[in-house]
Length: 143
Image 1 (cartoon, one colour):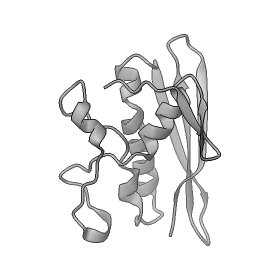
Image 2 (cartoon, rainbow, N blue to C red):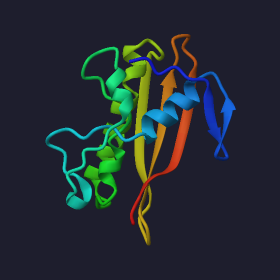
Image 3 (cartoon, rainbow, N blue to C red):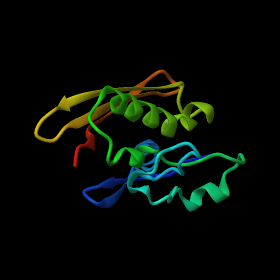
């Protein structure tokens, strides 16, 4: 699935960019459809997803991330690992489509109490070998 765009969000407004910023933001913060074995928060049974999936170049490709599944998760090592896994999954298309050579995601707890916070650092290695780094200091937080 191609994810080419040329706008990024800047203070809730769109700004022109080379497409990478916008692609990262949309890939991480659009709700990907839940898998059959995922536990849906709140028990609603709504697997979410996006209309973009209807236009996938490869049947079965899913756009977005499953970070939304962690909205009621506890701050435990498994949650930190799932944040990393879901970010890597959401951005994996970049390597498959040749937009990047590699996508490296690291996650860590940056605050335990009173509200826990998990941060992520994402390094995207472009085909020319240069790296663009993204830091999300509040990718997940306890409610």
